[in-house]
Length: 489
Length: 79
Image 1 (cartoon, helix red, strand yellow):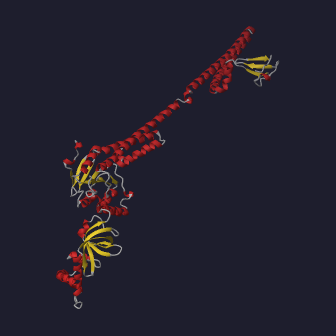
Image 2 (cartoon, rainbow over the protein chains, first blue to last red; image 1 turned 45 degrees about the vertical axis):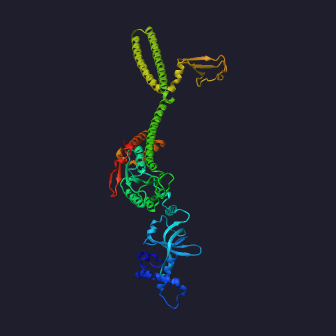
Image 3 (cartoon, rainbow over the protein chains, first blue to last red; image 1 turned 30 degrees about the vertical axis):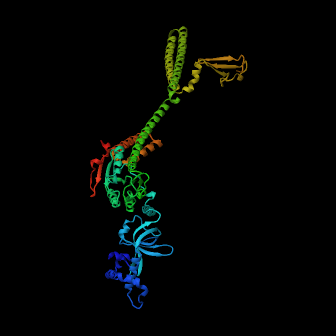
């Protein structure tokens, strides 16, 4: 009953298109009559009237009886999937069209979606919808023309998801370099889980792995994988998921082409690596995953390689850090060395010593000069005393002696003062080394030649002529000279 | 020093930044040494973090619980 009602929803909502219960009854009743009508058509009396229902029933039985099951080729158009799960569409070619329906149970087994414009080969039987006076094909099988059904389905899902942007590169998330937990969605019985665990045991001994067992082939696999993806995405600490299985036929891998799984992978809160079959197998899951691994082992390698890369990056940085710190120290050590060994600083002590010798030489000269001057005055005084002693006897002599002695004392005091002054002068001189140097020069045997008036120094032989008088200052005393001859150099 | 490090990622990033600064900048000796010390602490922290996780294999059950994986699943290399 309900099946019949679903057959004819073209103009009514499927649920309200229910056909009267008694329709089934007259149908059986009219069967033999319809047969006879058909047979007897040429001789039937046109005068005897029948009801519309009776005529429709006759048409129905003729169509169903005469045509029955057929295989029809045509293009799908006006296809529409109702909430009930039944699919209604029109099959057409260049010259004709026929309405068609496919029940939910058949639709569910279709791998592909019968979209408008698709060329198909459909098998079904012709039936009549009496309330509308229409005939239609009830399909129980459909294959796309040309492509295999699976290949077509694959292309369809791929196209649809691509149009939605689910494969876009901008959606791809980078893998975590240091995953806290690695999620794995696969079958516990397959080779994939062992391959993954083997790689991780070898290259990432500290890994924390959470496996969500799931069927990976068969009718229930897609739904199971979807649920598993949803579950593993919620486990705290899981921040990368590997979903996959080992190799197999295209039918074995089919669940990974399921649109629902593709959407579950896209919705996973953490990056997903797909690892389905062998290198050559591409599934929808591969397109939507953040990263596609050619095999389950390769997926595990990808997870660890990010970590190993990070380890070596940190090692490299630590090395560079040490090098750069060492270089900074070396550079400074070198610059300190450069400064201390530079000419300016290095020659300083020598220059100091030189100056100091110069000073002591000058000091020596000064002291000698002062001493000589004192001795000279001493000798003059002594000579004077002798002359006095010889010259003036008596009281006058006494008075004179007194005067002389006091004069001598004053003289000595003056000499002492002079010497003090000279000492002080010497100290001042010591501080004005450069100014005093002529004295030093004279002491070393050089002489100064003046003109006769002693107003300017004679620096060139051309400044004087033979017969001119000149004066020559020596370290000690002065000489008056007459120029004998001159020469240029 | 270690309590001023937030997490692994930021430690690794800071280490990289320090190396870059030291390689590029004309820093005072004191500053270089200070950065160097910090850098050493960071790389030590990173290594500790890298090794501190503990190997574990768990199964997520239908009810959403975690239980240890069956012994048969663990690879032989574990020995």
